[in-house]
Amino acid sequence: MITVVLIAVMGYLAYVFIAYHRIEDNRVLEVQNAQSGTMAAGEEYRILSFNIGFGAYEPDFGFFMDGGTESWALSEERLDANLTALSDWTAKEGADIYLMQEVDIDSTRSYHVDERKYLTDRLTGYGYTFAQNFDSPFLFYPLTQPHGFARSGLMTFSRFNMTDGVRRSLPIENTLKKLVDLDRCFSVQRIPVDNGRELVLINLHLSAYTTDGTIAEEQLEMIVSLMQKEYENGNYCIAGGDFNKDISGDAESYFNTSAANYTWAQPIPEEIFTGRNVSLVFAYDEEDPVPSCRNADGPYNPEQYVLTVDGFMITDNVTVNSAGVADLSFRYSDHNPVRMSFTLN
Image 1 (cartoon, one colour):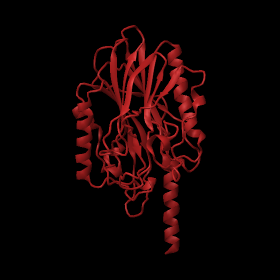
Image 2 (image 1 turned 90 degrees about the vertical axis):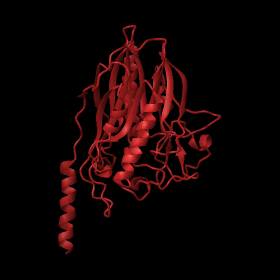
Image 3 (image 1 turned 90 degrees about the horizontal axis):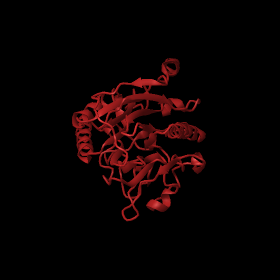
Image 4 (image 1 turned 45 degrees about the vertical axis):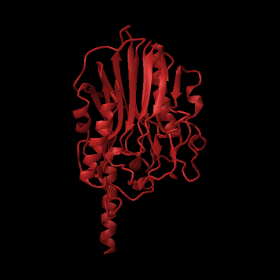
């Protein structure tokens, strides 16, 4: 019996290593439902970033990789209801641009539902791209309800003409940890501006489960370097999404929370921006401080560790008029959406 179990375990491990692969870099993204029209310098626009947590993170959901117990959405019916509600809310926001993360397309954890359709059915007046972020082998853990296949990605929506898009692969760990953190990428979209320049729009979802802290810094360095290059070429650049980093630099003081047992979200090193025309936007309202993320080690409660890991980076030719976190009390996801209004100078 022991021999059979060992053979099964070894066979599974061999399958995981053989099946593991990274999605190719510089994959061209097709712009679906393409819109017409350019953006205008001097006009105010609104952008919203929202990690939807594959539609599973209702307030009573705790994810097994964060210390909770669940590995799938609580049921297919609840997944449908939650995706419907969050998509309705998103559409009512009426932003000009949406950056959405962790949108599943064919994952075991979300009952193989193509979650893109919930968003595209409601955001009908927007062009969009989809960049696949995860494409993992079958994870046979937890044993009682294996997490299975994870196929997920980034969706970018725009009222204006996105002329093209491309998926860029991010650096990841080369250790066994890569089997847990899956693949990582960001997408780049271009929108023409009426002065002959372009808004270069970046949608990102950085690594969460790393043991080597330099990997996240390498990922940021890659994106910031691209933004600096676009700025020097005369273009505007906005990057937004889930940084999986403490954007405030000190969540304990901003949100009266304790990070004693949580080390996964470190501050973003300030030196990444030194000597560059790129800056970080921390969405925060002193009168109404709302975090963008909860640690999903169990059902949501007021004592849970919270912080802001979602936000934006901009080049110096973009003016931020306001930025804040929508207080949804983590009703649909372990993230609250982050808003920003901006002007292209």
